[in-house]
Image 1 (cartoon, rainbow, N blue to C red):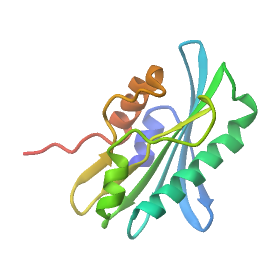
Image 2: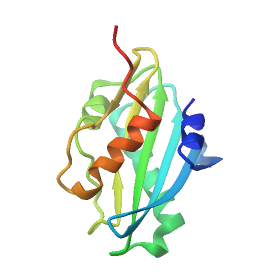
Image 3: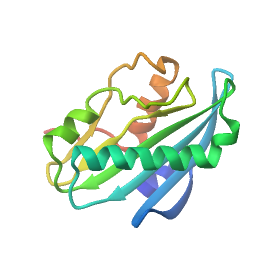
Length: 156
């Protein structure tokens, strides 16, 4: 389903591997506020998500995005990565990590990441949907992308 949502948004979609983990990569570039933004949404299915595993996955996805579009970083270009893990088991520390704006240890605004965990067993999408201060200009874009790719489940 995530693949179909990437395609519907106009992403180029590929099947790749990050380490030994098979992933679906959606890539799209947009111009926003006179800046070309390279957007990488990368989804993988795993058995369990814990905080260390989520942080490692985010780092791997950030490296993929920067490696592909790194030569265009700077004032007129940026990279947004949306690391998505789909699972049936997630621990509370990983959930807590997704509930705040994710900070990268990258100087300047060359890259921004916001991870998400889809808990299929609980029917929940865990990601930060608030307002971030760092990268505020692109806050609405990240929200818009996650709304398209991983909308909040409807509660009845």
